[in-house]
Length: 93
Image (cartoon, rainbow, N blue to C red):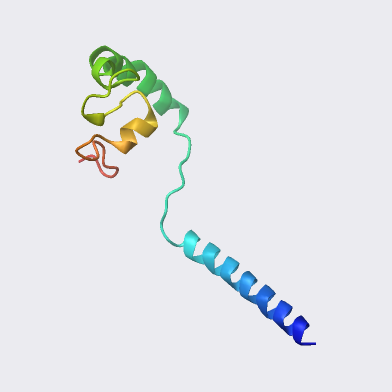
């Protein structure tokens, strides 16, 4: 009988902690990454990426990352440079 109570208590504790982790995680305000709209992707590929490729990738691309900054990947841009972040999300104004 004692083993059954211990098993029940452990199961209840596990269930409670699982529920609590979901409740806290869902209310923490953590944004989940989503794919950008296709029109924004098209704009970036047509107007922004060519400028970066012509002016930035030779020093901040796959072969060279001056100041630790890599601009040819989303992960590299979000990581930032040796001195810190180069892009801070939020209102651009």
